Image (cartoon, rainbow, N blue to C red; front, top):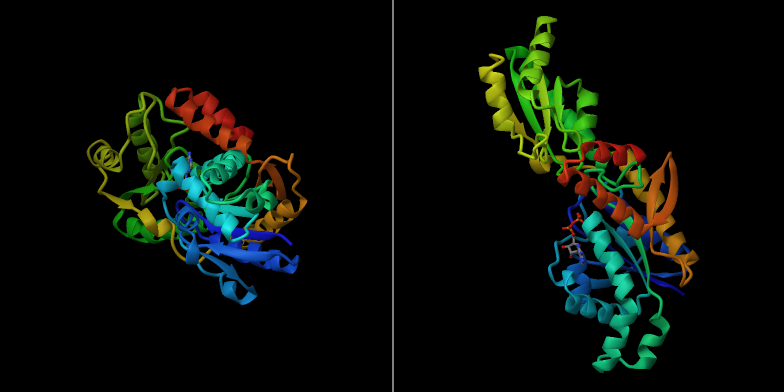
Amino acid sequence: KRRIAVLTSGGDSPGMNGSVRAVVRMAIHNGCDAFCVYEGYDGLVQGGDMIKHVGWEDVRGFLSEGGTLIGSARCMAFMERPGRLKAAKNMIVKGIDALVVCGGDGSLTGADKFRAEWPGLLSELVDKKELTAEQIKPFEHLNIVGLVGSIDNDLSMTDATIGCYSSLARICEAVDSVDTTATSHQRAFVIEVMGRHCGWLALMAGVSTGADFIFIPESPPGADWQDEMCKIVKKHRSMGKRKTIVIIAEGAHDQQLNKITPSQVKDLLTKKAGLDTRVTTLGHVQRGGTPAAYDRMLATLQGVEAVKAVLDATPETPSPVICMIENKIVRRPLLEAVAQTKKVAEAIEAKDFDKAMDLRDAE
Ligand code: ADP
């Protein structure tokens, strides 16, 4: 009988609750014990009441709730080995032999590190006489499964992360609201959306709202972008458009990696294009609220698959992350997905934008 724990970590995203519910219920359905770890890795490091044995009813109503009801945290202690040692002990004390982590690439990196260190952590616990050899014996192999919860859709090897479509829908609603006032007053709006290394939200919001110009980190504009943007915006105006929408990802920059800010774009639109321009920063509104149907579906199917992956695992299987590729729920090696994701950020930092775009295309 497996004892499977689930936690949510890093930035919250709509749909995380659906994945917790699916993991808990699929575990119980398969005759396993289910546990929720509260406040991300903090709960694992603290142990005790932060790791709760849960039943079917404990996750009732989770599917339609935004954010994460079991809490999330940025846990410094888990970044260091002593913190992970405590986490390992707490898991063994509770009898947990499998952990499902729903979070972004940071959380999944931590999860992978935890599994790689696991045998060493167990011997250290015995050496330090915190646990006996007898106690650790049933826990020789730890199963870790990753679920990608992120509004940015920034993990490689999956078409969609849990939360990205809710966030996109929220951005579109916000742009629609701004549109009405923009059209009434013939104004321009510069709208900043989230995405530090990943322009998916900005790009898809641009496509979905018919924006005039967008800025994304993977494909910065050319050296004459200021003229180019004003020319395009003016052309659209000359065709009768009464509003201007420019969407800018928070990680936007030019080809020299100088940050392009909303206020800079606003000044250009005001002074060069002669438009009455306002800036709207959507901020955490994009993260909040009810999950879209797609994210509930993705969270549920992936949560179910995560438990199946635990039940199928052998000591040789690398830790999987549950992905969605061409509309199919599939498992991919966690380490590879995280490594591939880091390559995009590295290509951007090295100003190799063709490579960054090729990597995104390959996703
Ligand atoms: P996200 O998962 O949304 O990318 P973070 O990068 O903040 O968010 O990571 C969330 C948590 O995951 C961190 O606070 C930390 O506890 C853990 N974590 C992140 N990176 C590592 C790492 N390299 N080693 C161990 N733990 C990590």
